[in-house]
Image (cartoon, rainbow, N blue to C red; front, side, top):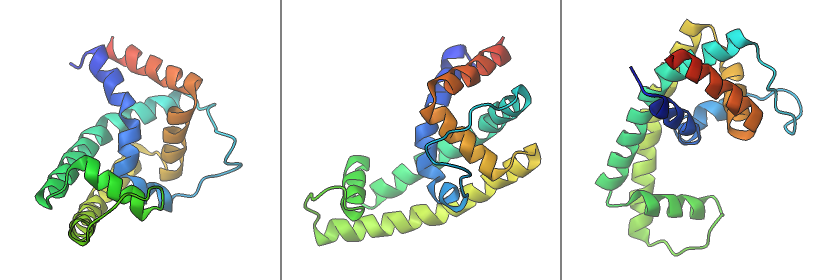
Length: 162
């Protein structure tokens, strides 16, 4: 049985999950005004969300580990990979050598290929649990951005561990 600290630490890694499910999340449209975050989910929906997260997190953690291994196998550190990513997204003007750019491109392509499998697994879990990808995404965003919703979800996790 997991400890309370492990559950809370796991839930706090949701931001990292967005890294792995980025392409999945980009494919799921959001509803309504982007400034309005829906947080009034039923207890049943939150329970289902927590159950899904318990299934998804190990898959995401494995994907993150694999991504780091791919990055390192291409002679980059995770920090350097992220710096080059920022340059690619025009968020930084750091210097990047042609060799680093080639390593980055190779690693990024490998990671994207592996993430396709992760996305399929996540979608299957959502389907099995009866939670739509859109609702899952919206709940992820709500958890990440709304402190009250985060507390409510954390309370469900605490309740489940007792």
